[in-house]
Amino acid sequence: MILTTTNNIEGKTIREYCGVVTGEAIVGANIFRDFFAGIRDIVGGRSHAYEKELQRAREIALDEMADAARRRGGEAVVGIDLDYEVVGKGGSMLMVTASGTAVRVR
Image 1 (cartoon, helix red, strand yellow):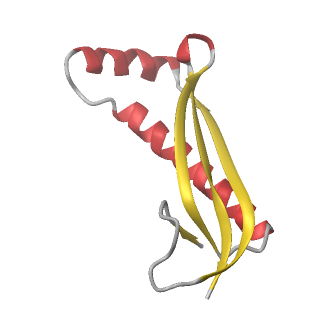
Image 2 (tube, helix red, strand yellow; image 1 turned 135 degrees about the vertical axis):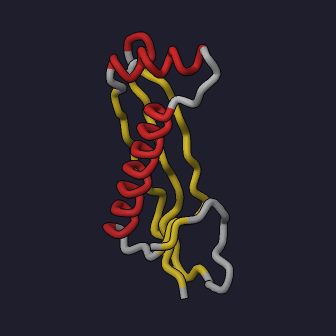
């Protein structure tokens, strides 16, 4: 499955549009990781716990979007947009949404 943020795929021709597809992921952050991430952020370090959760959420959202494209008969997804939101009480969860257009190519 080809996934791209561009509206076309170099070397391929879009022969059919299969519709808009999306994938979502909401992941909770562990309270201890939140606490230690806050300490690292205060002293200027990177928060690897948050980076890992963000990467995991993005991969889940993209995988779900690709699965939705396959169900519609798509061979690729173009025009992908990734959105990130902090949700939940006190921003305790991270939501990632991936959306794009499923297409058939030649």
